[in-house]
Length: 88
Image (cartoon, rainbow, N blue to C red; front, side, top):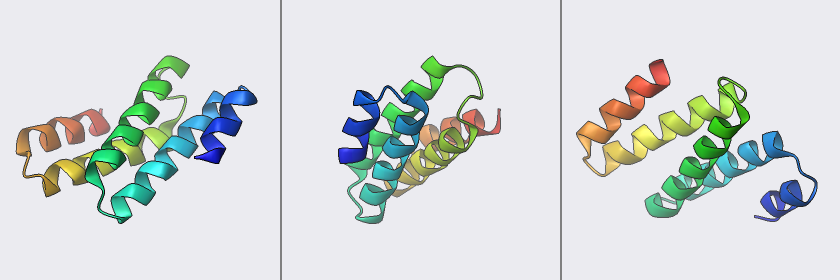
């Protein structure tokens, strides 16, 4: 989380997106789905504000990971919608 704070203070939003995604992956690996989802959603929100396709890798990894979370939660509709968004 230090990296997220550092990217804020240095005003590096692209790096912050990657840091948020990385935190999401850490929490997903720990099976803390709630925290993981929060970090992936924040990464996606920041990517959206930076402009279309500005953070392609972070966006796709975040969407794929959110789909994994929704799959683990048996939320088929959210999983499908997230995968469709990733495809587009």
